[in-house]
Image 1 (cartoon, rainbow, N blue to C red):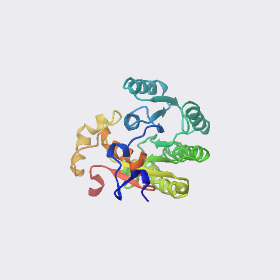
Image 2: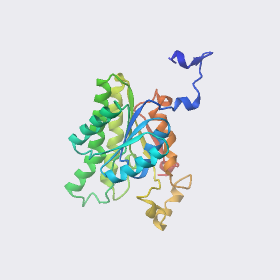
Image 3: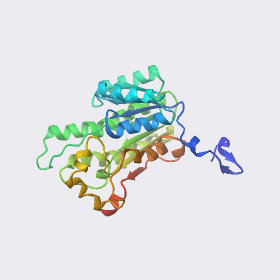
Image 4: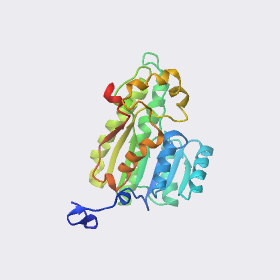
Length: 269
């Protein structure tokens, strides 16, 4: 049912910008010291959310927060290692003390290690799973527990990958972890829907960031372009619309969904 405040002449008349308005919301973005995490934080802050940037590197976080606050946006940094339970608890304690209970979480922290499955060590496998999958679960779990305790509804957005839907040689651990993120998203969505907590995932394709720019602009990277129907790699802003859809009232009836944003790449695989 459409709430009365949204009805006019029997139709939903909420203006487009109002659908994506995040004023009064507190958002947490992990893996926000570089790449897509910084872009996600900027997108949320630009739409009114008080945004917490989280990663292990305090100095880099502080620089990004300074850039956002210089634009008149509300942002703060919390350094945390999300593979440690005590750091996750400290993160949410800090945010609640300063700004209140977060109702938006973007689980973006992750790593990709190049290693054949015939050669990968137990330590490297465990490291990948600890950050890419375990930390997603336990950070989301803490966010959900805090929202439930405060009787608040919210949105959790897990960052997966097209390599969680398809595989590529040499990064089997990464592919496996991201496939786990997609299924974990569905499981959390089903379990927490009754408490008003929506859980969805984004599955980006190849996108140019500071981390992979050199490779994607190299001959080997450029050789991938014919396999992408739109004939280009993603740019960081290409994911903002989907992120804001899932974080805001615009996506209020979406949960358990994975949105693939890859220029059509998976169509050709």
